[in-house]
Length: 81
Image (tube, rainbow, N blue to C red; front, top):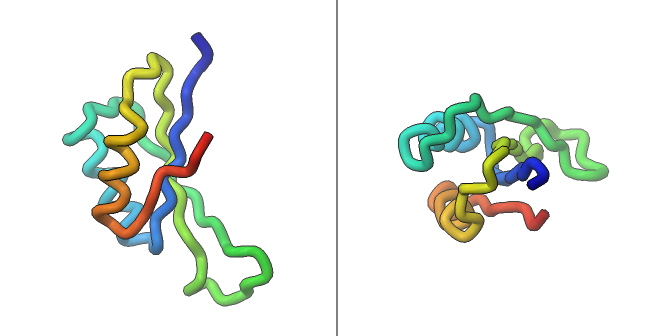
């Protein structure tokens, strides 16, 4: 089975950091999620950047709908693969 990667899109850095910390507790994610700043196309203002939390899921055991609901608690969503 190929490695699965989930990308959670969050509205700001604070939310992304909270989500990254909470992933280990709630989903048992052992590998440190990667935080990536994603500036919106055509936006120069850093305040308009979204943050991505990239979660590696090599065994494919994370539930996408549960991740989406989790991200929604922080006004975010799970990016469709």
